[in-house]
Length: 327
Ligand code: NAX
Image (cartoon, rainbow, N blue to C red; front, side):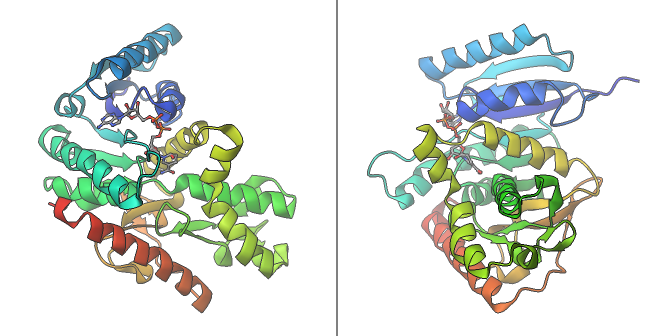
């Protein structure tokens, strides 16, 4: 029997990531080749983005995707999240020239207060949320705090792009296929402070650090290169990561709905791995039928602990900046 369609709300749907994302959702890469979807697309309620959204929707129509059983376009979050089973929060404001990080946090934080409340009022009882819009960990914390009806663990932020970048760079250094790299997880914030934990990673089933055999490269080149990859993409392409970010969101959600999948997700830390309780921090999880279990078995050495402290301190300072926005 054909599956019932799921409702997928996407914000910032006419943006760069939106344009690379929607066609992959519509083709079945996120929820499966037999899972119909109804797309509920949100853009800011002004003429330019609304017109662009219409154009994107026209192209989705023109693909005649068999899995797309409906599509609605919105300028109001209360409508866009109506009965949504998945809310993909991609839209937010980019950092403007001369803008301080604290201003960005406060500006974008307001979006996530409103969207968290709209999700609380209108999304499906089983709704799950994935936040991409930056600063994604803290935006996710804000949205979750406003949505009391849903458990905080339904709210996740995306660190999968960092995991994918970290795996690709280890594979290139070792001269192996990316599929040979496993157990590489991202801890902490989606920002240059993140810790890509190569100390437990494996290449071809063997300890990655031993295979690479160059501790100085891992500490001094690899970690900063993964952390600053977003800036390197902007420098090279003249625009921020879009297709790779969309690809990472496909991976993030697909693995969350695939029981047994093990991957990095930013979740309410619960004090695990030395993170402060209440911040959303990247760490490894194993997906289950309805959610995930956190993998807590990795023992961190002093170097890893010092890296986790730095990214935890940044998450705490972000939380402090937006404290009046937490519901
Ligand atoms: P764009 O500026 O191309 O698109 C964002 C879209 O969101 C715009 O069309 C805008 O009109 C819309 N928007 C803004 N406020 C909105 C609101 N309140 N409701 C609905 N729509 C709204 O940016 P894009 O390149 O698509 O990036 C989107 C976000 O992803 C940015 O915050 C960016 O920093 C973040 N990223 C996060 C990544 C991650 O790994 N977590 C990596 C890629 C990316 O940098």
